[in-house]
Image (tube, rainbow over all chains, first blue to last red; front, side, top):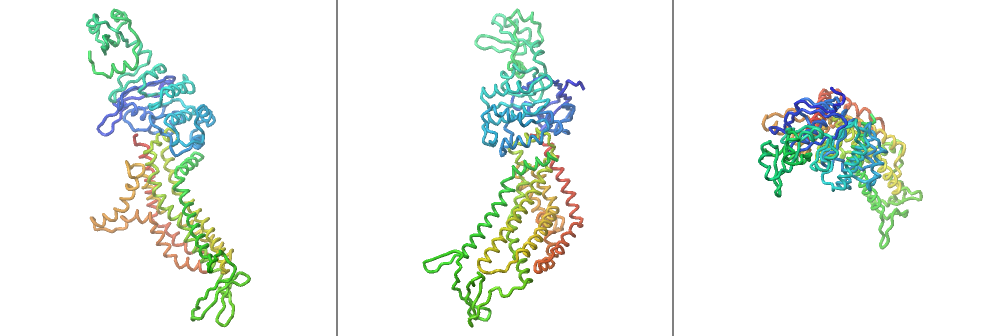
Length: 287
Length: 343
């Protein structure tokens, strides 16, 4: 396996009884990437992440940092950190106790670093988790994760329920204190616009199926959006856009694999926002 | 090893209320009741006056076995004496020989120990509830996802929970029982001296206390070994149960012999085995066999080891070892269920 590939999957799938949560999927995620896993609720994002984390059984081949996650979860967690979409810190524990236990339980956890991170907040070290708000809970979890010298950070809707200030502070902290070219971040979120500027790779999932797996660079070379005037609409449609949306007298079309010179006849081709591309690929062809 | 100890510390912090606070509170209540009863017994009300621990003689007339009137009072040394109808003053406890004092001391040590066992009995029941919730609650509050994001294997988690809940939980309750036992003996000694009944020899009491503690510790170890397969079954149920883990664990244990009797017309021991293991039936049976040796030991203030022999003999019973093997298998099953289930 290529040393740069941290996560690889071949035919990875997961079913809950008759319901297929993740259809056979092939993936390769190299190091030094920030990968956005984007999909609607129930699309299979968390299922994919849970398989990668060894929190769920699966069918197919999956290799994370050279390990089978289901067989070697505890070993894998030496190098993988995880924040879920819900508050998972034990409510009965005190933060100080949690830090003390983690010092013994995780060989790569630096207690002083976590304490220093927490000092930047207004959360007292001796507070109990159950006394904290959702935002504070995330801040404590983040201070733990950032104090672990891991190779992969998995974030499953980590900022769900936080206000815009806390959401931005969260991602700023992750970028500042965790990310470098040796590490990879996998993140799922509904607030695509907010994380788009930091993403280097995007995976779209719809109904358990990966509909797009590409770097942002590839996406910006492959997909273009154009605002088409009414008189050129019919001609533009003949180029088979993958998506067309008319709003307030203006029609926006998204094209895949078309030469920019051909598109320039209808307007100035521009980069497609991930949110728009996601909707375009998730919506049945309406053009 | 350090990791395992930390997991135990974590579990004890989680179950502090049930495993640590409960035996302490029960002991405090027992002590409070005993101390208040001593105070109530020392309260004297004479007309409009009342006093505690009065040194003056009580104006009490009782009858001896022959129907003669006896007048009770304390002598200048604080000993309880009585005056018979001929005007002779004698100590209530008579002239106690060392043997008699030793016997009384041993019986007092045993009597107080039986009273002090309550926290341990309650802990035996509490442990069942804590075990049933241990692997279920972490799923319910989703904290399992945090713990699973750490380099801790499922078998380490299950093993630590078994040791912390069963081993430390019951071990701590036994320690509390020992401390309560000592406290009750101190109160009994002070109270009996206060009432003028100087009948206890501290060295003899302590000697019997130590023997009783060793006896109880051995009993507890034997009980845990016998109950181990049921503890493991409860953990496996806790790991699997979608809800109500306690019911899932105990309904089969209670219903199994009942259903076997109704539908199979069979009352074979095998169907009663889980119930027998968790109630410590083999231990009770062995205790009954060693009853006489135990009584002799307490009466004479001598060694209690002979009373332990029938219990030691249970260690050679195949059903104990089969149970232990099943217990290990069920612990592994609990860990595998925890490892494989999805969230």
